[in-house]
Image (cartoon, rainbow, N blue to C red):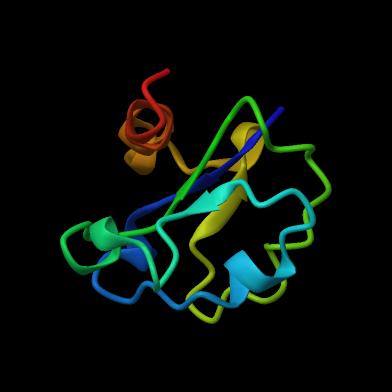
Length: 86
């Protein structure tokens, strides 16, 4: 079960979650070219180790365990995966 970044992250892109992630699976980072053009950050569903370290540091409560993702944001599962070509 991977984690998913959903709608509340749009146009916020606070990178506290990036710093909290022990396996570097949240992108784009501030120093990456896509940071300026992407509307939100994304979690790689394959690389995510399901540790949940990113959840408590998100200031807009945009990160959810897949099983806890509100139905209204289901499309963000595919959006996160698509960012990584999955």
